[in-house]
Amino acid sequence: MFSLIFVAYLCLFYLLFVSKLFPYASLLSTCKMLFQMSVMKYDIHQFMEADAFLGPFCFTLFIFLVVFVCMNMFISIVNHSYRRAKQNQIEDQRVFSFMINKFLRWLGNKIYLS
Image 1: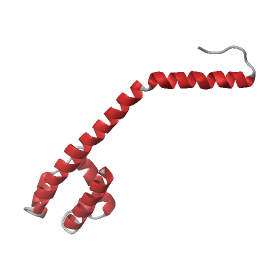
Image 2: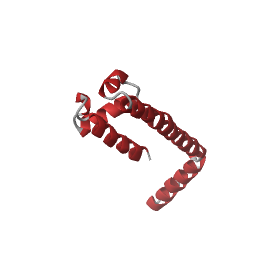
Image 3: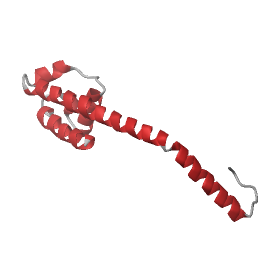
Image 4: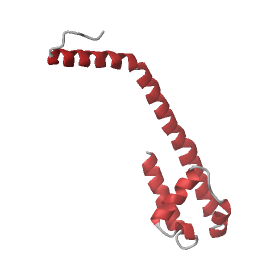
């Protein structure tokens, strides 16, 4: 979802500002500027100079959708996965112990791990 929204904004900013702003002269530099904007390194004055309405409007939509919605969604997914992995840690240790015991038995070793 993040990639789809980011590519949509990449196309939007590139098509809107390709002829008006130098940092948006190519798709790669536009992508770089959008990543900088997503970590809150931006200059809003260049958007206002390029277009009085569309510049700040698109910038505001980008900040709300990408920074607030998508980044929070990404953080909550990572947090949920971390919590789930921590709960499965005990079960993973039992599976690992079982695998080691099977491997030792296969080698002919009589000592087993608990």
